[in-house]
Image (cartoon, rainbow, N blue to C red; front, side, top):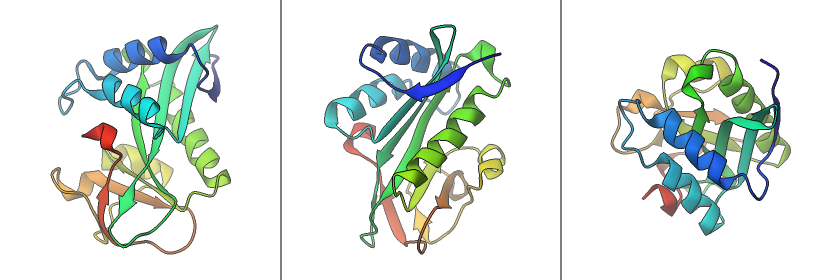
Length: 165
């Protein structure tokens, strides 16, 4: 598969919505709200970085980053997600490429760190790990992970942008 990654552009919204809905349709831990979350992040001005993977003019993957609040007041931390790839294209490197590019872009923009909710086995390959200093109520603790990009690891409970409601 030959794809390129670029920043979301006006006019991509409908394709991103459809892709995100398809990507999460059969995910056990999904309530189906992921497409609306991306739209609300965009509407609220909380879509800090939105990248798409494109193959022959078709959007085949998407990743979103949005600001998070940390109890100790740490600045420039962001949440990764959702990440979406067409189900029939899983295992072809689209998601991994989006995550790597997203991490690099966020680091270049001065982000201090990134948090996410996801599979510890999958995200460990990108350097994410669970650290009890950062907490997120609800899911099993090991699924809430962080990647320190700069400075010291903050501590406390993490809150996502209102779009995640």
